[in-house]
Image 1: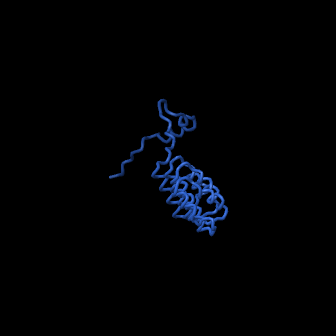
Image 2: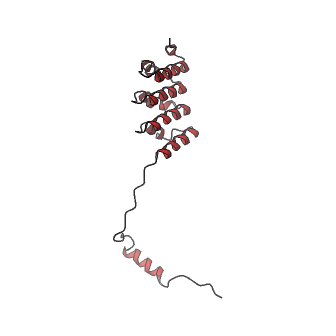
Image 3: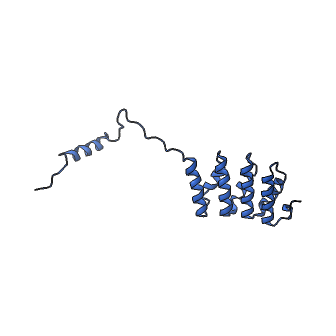
Length: 155
């Protein structure tokens, strides 16, 4: 028994003619435009931070952008990843993060700066020894100790 073809006679010609005449380029009336891509969720962003950390990559500026997210948990986890990656290019962003309104973010930025060990962070860390939050003061002292600055020795 011969194989049955499910082709409609002349359909190729009709499609080709429609393309040539521009019918295929016109949207159908009432057709919806495709939805814009959705923003990544918090979990997806945190997953991306972990991925960057695991690959020891700052992701062509992506990690620095994550340090600026409105979500304090993303900023905190991104600071830790920056410290573990230990890319000195992230030091200015971490120094700026020492001005964050959230103490948990400031303390993680100080910890990250200690992990990186760049002396460019010393003055900001010394200033953080006067932070109102004890945890931030402690992390700043710890970071200064890692860098080898004696001002990190708390009384």
